[in-house]
Image 1 (tube, rainbow, N blue to C red):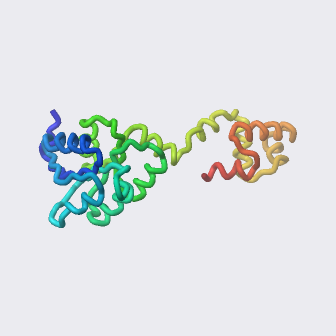
Image 2: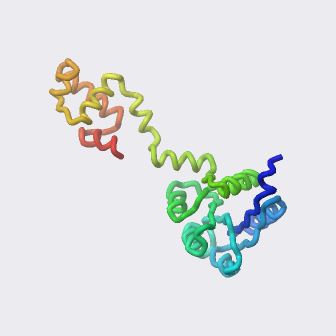
Image 3: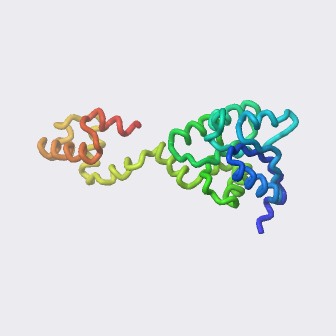
Length: 214
């Protein structure tokens, strides 16, 4: 048994317009040692109507597609009202646009609704302990955003000589200078560059060099 939960008291809020899901979450967490669900509502507006100044929340689970104000806009409002309160989005949406809007507005985690209740509980504890919980598919999209899928794979398709030619071009060498450096003909250099452009999906030296700094 993990006794960590017994020494925590996480004060939880839930914003979810589906009454069945909302009640399920409230009932589940109120049965868990170390958790207390203090507020729940079907919309951001209704939640704030209940959220009095003397009610302190550690974590809020919020849907995105809500009646009235969206959950994404709600995050910014929550952080303004209580900067130390953490927000985890719990939603069906997994598109990059909504993910990054939520994170940029201050969300600390992003879970999909199919996440099992026990995993949601673990995510909240992780967040409370300094983590940034995300469903695996969401985390993958975040990684791909900063390291676009295929970029590494494309460079791995280059031959050792083609990789050397790319490095030389990035240094600013002309085709003639590349030929001299590697003691190959100018036609061979052009042949390598043609293959490099195809493999890296670029059509100019400028585009090739720009890839490095994206």
